[in-house]
Length: 115
Length: 110
Image 1 (cartoon, each protein chain N blue to C red):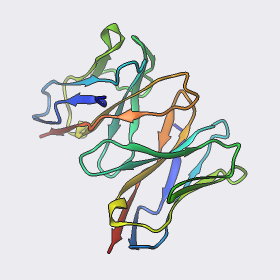
Image 2 (cartoon, rainbow over the protein chains, first blue to last red):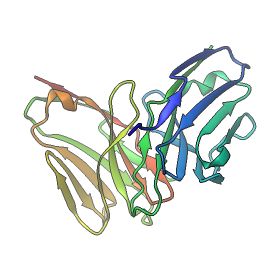
Image 3 (tube, rainbow over the protein chains, first blue to last red):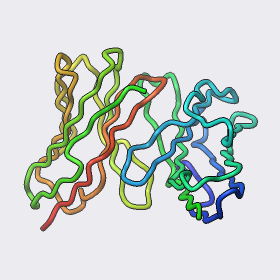
């Protein structure tokens, strides 16, 4: 079974440019997360989806970040315009709620460098 | 946001030795405490997890010790191997949300 698939793996852009990341979660996982991992730090939650609904976006910088999860499967995370401080690895994870434990399966991440 | 404090930041262990990583949390409502392992260029992967109703959980060479009153938990890696060299993250939370520690880079030398 394929794991959580993310693309692109690497992206280099100049500041003020837009960028988008795509995530395909594990089949059947109804919960999808976007995390940001700064260099030398742990992942920090940006947004959590239950099916199509964003149920926790309290940490998402809404002035420049947006996300969507159409049809409750794939998701995209967009940054417009990007700033230097947005350089990080953006991790997508999915889980199946109701299993009694929050077992997150992460993708390999999308590494963003903003110049 | 509630913090999860993790130490040490880095750890060097000789092959066959014991690696110990510690974490402390603040929110007494947390009921799920996993440890994730991350290799370079990969996403974190679940290693082992514990609920607060037990004080210890062992899976192979990996053991979590949990102290509810002190709000602390630790990961012990017995007989550490070079293949264990990775970054380890503790996390704390519940079924809705996990807060991750800052990570410990473990290096195991032959």
